[in-house]
Amino acid sequence: MSRYKLPILFAVTFGSAASAQAPLKVVAEGDVVAGVGTVTSINNLAVNNSGTTLVEADTDNPDTDIDSVVLRGSALDLQEGQGLALPAGSTIRFFDSVNVNSNGDSGWNIFIDGTGSSFNDSGVYFNSTLVIQESDATTAPGFTPLTPYIGFLESKMNDSNQIALIASLDDPAISSTVDRAIMRIDLDGSGALLSETAILKEGDAAPGVAGFTISDFGIGAHEFAINNAGDVMYGVDLTGGTAQNAIYLNETPLAVDGAPSPVAGRNWNVLFSAELDLNNVGDFVFNASIDGPGDSSRLLVKNGAKFRQQGDTLPAIGGVFAFEHFGTGPVCLNDSGEVLWFGNWDDADLSVDEGLFIDDELIVQEGVTTVGGVVIESLASSQDSYAMSPNGRYVLFEATLVGSIDGAFIIDRAPLGDNYCVGAVNSSGLGATLSASGSLELADMNLTLRSEGQPGGVSGLYYFGPNQIQAVFGDGFRCVGGALRRVQPPVMANEGGISARSLNFAAPYATSLTPGSLNFQLWYRDPMAGMSGFNLSDGLELVLQ
Image (cartoon, rainbow, N blue to C red; front, side, top):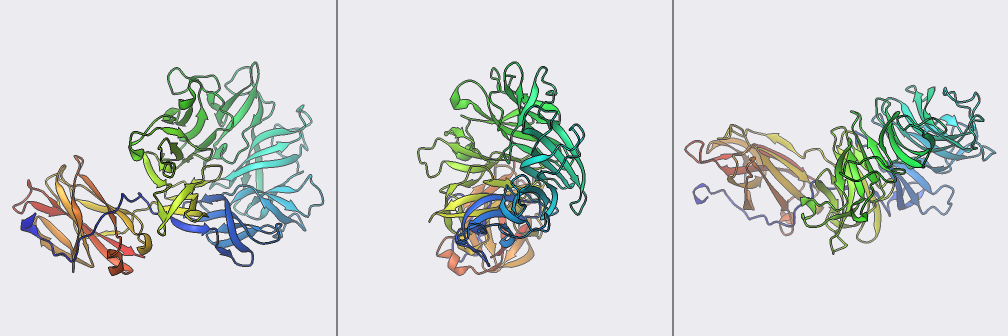
């Protein structure tokens, strides 16, 4: 490359590979909630397509009747002890799990004080507006008239103002005193109740499973799901010749204990309490067990096919380690069909053996990923420990940073920066285009630069500088001006014409960078093109924070 020298101030060195995205803090232990106290722990969380987050947290308020809060972003949304319009004189006693749809609305179960009775001390709310109170009679067809609700377990809301609800009722026509049902509640835009539908209830014949009846439903926050079409996916407990479990989509069984699983020669085993999800185009995913050897009995299934199995490996974990378990937290599915899941693998170094994945990509790893320069010490992997927005742009998760700081952190998966200038056509018939992922915070600025559209197998060199220009250079255009800095060492495009470089602006280089615009470009060989033998990508502007 000596024929085509670029001006240099100094070279940039590399650290370890940057994570694909850089998490930012939403709320963490030690943060102050004005008028309430200091955050001491994270409980539940949710995120929508706009990046709106809800985090339920505890604080150090000495009055334990008012110490728990729900934060919208970092602002107080609801607090224990807060008064509610209905029922009259009621206050919030505590929260169930949280959810937020793309309109910013929530449909959830809230436990309340001030009703004068333990038989009506909870309700289903649209935000803070009461929809159904415990002891209200259901209007859903299929129940004896005046059948009352006697409890609410979990609820979730879609973008169509529908709430999926696991409820307990007391129907005199059903022999048990607590009768469980999976309900769909339809609301208008202000949260007023329009209708109630019992999708299935205790005592119903199990659709598609001859000789069995419904005896119970999975009651965990991630043991049922609703999409924008109003489809509901859920787990059930069946009784018949031999008690067994199943997973349903509406009234169609997707998996039944004892039936063949996607793994040849192995059957489903204990499907009850399976974590599951359903997206807005009808794809589904769940985490359940199959029979056979215990070291390969846990299975993640997407659309009826094996997605991941205990004992599998991936290049993201070195290709030599095997997954030991997938945690007890949710498994999430976005509308593009990407799966967010937790994995633990058999690395002897227990400080780096757990992470969050989207499909094959390891996006957060304990002992490796940092937030604001502080390493994540451990990841939460139980109920409500992580969530993904339906459009897949945002991932919200709970983790503990070095120093035992518990917090909720968010990843924005949208591409970083703005492209400009021209990536001229090369010998592959394409132009090379840059993209970047990672952090733009100077305190923790690890970036991954990526270029696609190069000829396969050619070498190249990333560089950056302060100014944007467009000047003919080689067979393309130089898009970066001013004092240029090379990113060493060079890169090699794969056969698909893609190259990537992880870049760590470690000291002393960070001291010379200030907030503002920084521009990147790739120089690469292209011997089959014009007389110069090289070409360049377009430019990418990143704004340092």
